[in-house]
Structure formats: structure tokens, C-alpha cells
Amino acid sequence: MLERSCADGNLGRWFRKRGRVSDAVQLPARPADLDENVADLWDVLVGRLAEKWAPELEELVARYCRAVALSRRAWSKVPKSLTARGSMGQPVAHPMIAVAQKADAEAARFGAMLGIDLTVKRGAGRPPGAVSAPDRKGAGPAKVTSLRAVKGGKAS
Image (cartoon, rainbow, N blue to C red):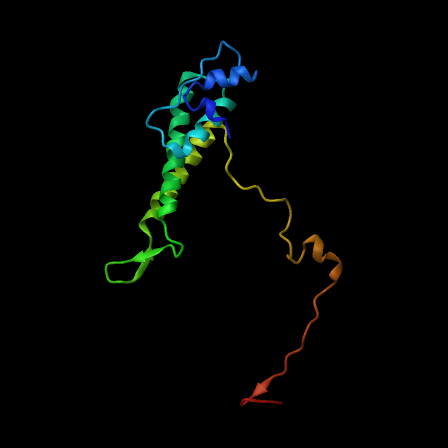
């Protein structure tokens, strides 16, 4: 993502040097308690929000980054089977799934406040293969098969 030259937290100088931000904007340094896995995310978000930066955004970006970090950590702990053993030895949903889902929801909420849209956009219209989908329009009606009545297990 960003060069490691801005890893010292002097992000404002990095963006000003490249002409992306004016000298009047004060960009915050990365919080010391921020997980190293989302340091690049912080840098990118602060860079994109640089022109409309306000002090209130610092806490919002930090919370978004922390939620993403927690989500990544939680999902990394979930096994591929998505299950764990219950108290009676039965398979149950792994408890870290709930933590990861809550962190995902928090990240989506903070992302929405920042203008980040994480939803997957589908194309308009019917899904491929649907009866009225464009790929099925010229096929004509489906062939109707007559069924024979069966009495006593033998065909008549």
C-alpha cells in the first residue's frame, strides 16, 4: 500500500510531498495502540479523507480500524469446519463466529459513517438460469412429459 517511509506516523508529510493534501490540513499520527495488521488501512483512510478531515474523524477511523482488526483476528481463529465440541460432545457453532460477526457489523456501521460501502452489488434483473432470464428466452416452453397411473405397483 503506502511506502514504509510513512510508517513513522508522519503521514501528513507523505501526502503533502505527493501533492495530495494542502499544508493547511493537519493529519493525525497513527494511534500507538492500533494493531499492526490494520496500519496500512489507517494510512489509506486518512489519506482519502484528508481534504475533508475533521478532528471528530480521528476517533471514527480508529474505531473502524479496531473493528476490522478484531474481525480479522476472530475469523483467523475459526476452524474450517466452523464447529467446536459442545458440553456433551456434540458439534456446535464455534464461539468465535459470533465475535467475528459482531466485529464485522461494527466495522460496517463505522464504515457507513465514513462513507465506505461494503455491500456486494448484484446486477439488475433475473439471475442466470431463471425461467424468464435473457439466456432462457428463446428456448421455448419446456417439454411436458405425461405420467402413467400405477396400480398395485405395476404400470397399466
